[in-house]
Length: 574
Ligand code: WTA
Image 1 (cartoon, rainbow, N blue to C red):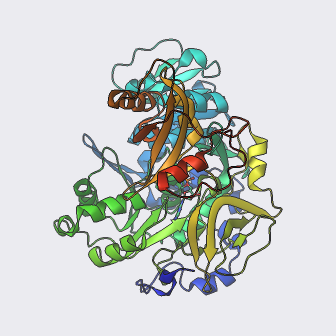
Image 2: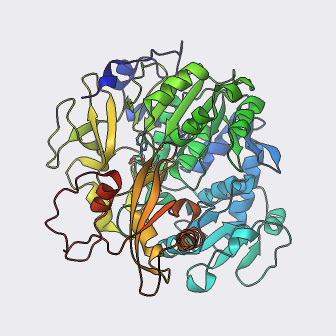
């Protein structure tokens, strides 16, 4: 099926937490993992306790938990510091009546305050909703509204994007910045923190109580609120151990923003459940800055994304030589297909293999991965994590033999599996439409050696630089522009970003195509929705292909773009 299947890069690690993959897979037992948590003995569950306080109780309070850098700050926080600060924020939340089960959002650029807030929210048993800083008014409003959020933590700059008068449930906004003008519902974060006690009663919850709500895109409708529970920590902990290979003295750096699931499951939970020093870098991306971050912090484990590795490859080998990256011992990737040439390049230039990992917002944790102790086949996502059964099945649930393409599916349940799509039971059930299986929406095949190979999506979801973008959300914004009559949005292949967003647009009477209009429309999406959702390419058409029921046929748009046959057109309008 694939000429790459024969190529392997041998395991490099002389020792790893996993050891033999086959043995670990065969002997796996979740009960054994449970015993590693304090709640196994005390019966008291809270992920924030396991991630922070437990290490203080175990005498490791003085260890650095967080090293934060961006253009203006360079700070270190110990586990003890984070315990005290998150306790303070938990007390602030309590004083504003926020309790277990409430949805509380954080909408801010990466900063120590973001991490402290998120932990404080979890400590009171509330469900945290992280929002990516690039979201604009509509994107913010949709998510706060759908979740019925009662409170939000934000910054003075981002506050202007929150349409308070349209969000009746949103009672309290904590603003972290200088000289905050306090008014009804607007609270000065730092002033409250300064007054709050550093002791707090953690809210002990049940393993099935809500932890986090991540909004993500599908091909139709508004973004879906994917709901995870505290029990997910089992998966975060175990994959942190065997996939990230976290060990006591590691300096770990995950480059993802907490607005996306990688930035929480593996940017916060997994490293801190292991009590490891976590490097967080804010600000903009340049290869030099990133290599500098590795060099200055002596990063040992680096988790990033194909789009970044492709950019590094584009920046070339010479820049790598200007930095000392010898601290690195383990590199991982997630979010989109990791090109084989990137794996080869990384192996040559960094002298380290890049380990691909496959999972989704909905799965809460890594499911199919490459391990430091296992040979890599460049271009393959690897093999199922011990405890996880993956298969390629057809639309009737029949398991297909090796080398046949089909639906990538996972046996239900596993600890970090989503428990709800907020307010949308039918959407949730779609994923489980074949009894006993979670249907990912990705297509793949498995080779004779049990390695899985990604093939594509079955829906129209766009993956640009590792970020999932729903075409419907972009189309809805586009048609709000006065010049736009109709819009259809597709992902167009791009060598660095994987895909870019391309919009096909038909104009209203009285408007004519021009370069200025394209620019204006792109800007309209950027300012209304978010920068990463704005089309990088726009093409005007007199008419868009539609079904007789009026649905725009993105499949036909894609075929136009790629010069492919358009397939079955029996449902087209004319
Ligand atoms: C894609 C990110 C190929 C896939 C954690 C999946 C991948 C979607 C890989 C989830 C990979 C993720 N190789 N494709 N290693 N990892 N994807 O929810 O289509 O932002 O369904 O989660 O990204 O994206 P999400």
